[in-house]
Each structure stands twice: as C-alpha cells, then as structure tokens.
Image (cartoon, rainbow, N blue to C red; front, side, top):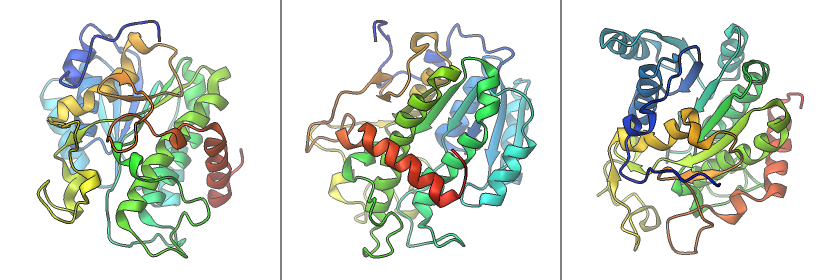
Amino acid sequence: MSTTIPFGPSSTAADVIAGVDLTGRRAIVTGGNSGIGLETARTLASAGAEVTLAVRNVMAGQEVADSLLADGLKAVSVAPLDLSDRASIASFVAAWDGPLHILVDNAGIMATPELRTPEGWELQFATNHLGHFALTTGLYDALAAAGGARVVVVSSRGHLNGEVLFDDVMFTNHPYDRWAAYSQSKTANVLFAVEAARRWAAAGITVNALAPGRIRTNLMRHIGDETNTAVPDRFQADSTDIPWKTPSEGAATSVLLAASPLVEGVTGTYFEDCQPAELAVPGILKGVAPYAVAPSNAARLWDLSLELLDTVP
C-alpha cells in the first residue's frame, strides 16, 4: 500500500469514520446486535449508511435497532439470519433487493462443545465459514451491482493456531478439539477473502479479512473470562503483550475496511490493528500465517465449500 494509514491498536471506530459520508450506501452486518458487530453497525449508520442487522435472534436485534434509532440514527433495520441454517441463508438472500455496497461478515462462535448441523457439519466451520461463504456468494449480484462494493470478513489471531484440515474438515475421523475447530474456521475466513478477491476483482468488489484483537464480548460465552483455564496458553497474551480492546477499538479495523477511502481498491489482504499484517513469526500471536494466504489453499477451500453447499461457481 502506498497510502499511510494513521490508525493503530488504540484507534476507535469513531476515529476511523470521522469525515466519511456513507449517505446512499447500503450495508449488512452479520451479528450486528452485540459486541464489535454492534459497534460496526452503529458507526456505519452514524456516517449515513442504511444498515441491516442480520441476526439469529430477531427480537434482540430489534431492541438494538430501536435503541440506535432512538439515538438519532436514521436507517437501521433487522433481518433474520441463522448462518448454520442453509434455508435461513437462502431466505435472506432471496429477500434482499437492490445493490449492496458493504457486507461485514462479522458473526461467529468460538470454542463450542462438539455440535453439528443437520447435515452433520461441525458447527464452528459451518457457521463461521460455510454460512458466510453461502451468504456472500449468494449476494454476489447485489455486490456487483453496487459498483465498488466492499466485503469485510472478520477472522481472528486464533487462525495462527491451526490450518484447514482438508482431509477432515468436519472432524469425522479426528477426535474433536474445539480450539482446533475454531482455528480452522478462522483460517478459512482469511482464505475465503483471498480467493473471493481474486475471483471478483473484475466486478470491482474488494474483499479483505481482519483480526479485531482481544475484546471481551459474548463470543467468549463458551469459555468464561480470560482467567478461565479452559483457554489454552497459545490463545492467551504472549510475549507481544497483546492488550484487551474496547468494542469500539475492536470494530475500528472492520470500519476501516468497510468505509475508509484510505483503503480504496485494497483487496485480498489481512489486516490487524488497522494496518496490513506482516507474515507471522512462529511463536508470536501476531501477523498472518502463510498457509492462510496461500493461493492454492484458498482455491482448494473454495472448491470444497461449493461441493459441500452443492452450489454453482
């Protein structure tokens, strides 16, 4: 990148959006009713975007939307979306009408017990990757119609702890490990951004992935707080002394990629702390793993995802 980005780990979503006008832009934020999804949605709406909160719990989502509207934001709506349910995704896509300028694939689950969808798919891979894959590819025409649309895929530094297990992505033959499953799904998020960026460049759609940082949100509901011994050492702060962020600080990179003119045209890149990430150094929980940006892995995952979802390219 030739443009210097004047934001970093302590920048907030409000810092990033300052001076940006999103009037006339339409945005979807999955999981937009809590945590960094809520902060992302709030910030985009504050800049004039028409924001749809795509959420599993519509009642909770409507309460959030009503609160944002009461705060003076003018265009916030709610639509049902269960990323682990193919029918729900298909219904959401079918109901969308018109162009889509910004799609933030934000929702996710972490370190669940061994749970499976009706298809037998491991729930973290099915929700964090396959659900967003189906949603985003299903909305391709709407994104292409927008002219210069942006897709933002929320991954995690947790991707550094595990590749996609292409020989057994659903843990059919391997003993289930909830942290390995989480890492795999977050690596898949990055690989999806890499391949979508390549495939969709001609349509003017940019696709980037990011790690939001360490934020206390309900994503941690299956493990407790940061003192919980169920969290492996490799997921704790290491020698880089990664600080905890507020939700607004955690949403800053999502907002940067969704709306800032500073990253206009940037695609297929993994960001952290509002900056393009360097390749990771083994043993340090920072940067992007080489296997998560390998074109061969990205293409292989795309093909596998199409096969699993029985969709067309």
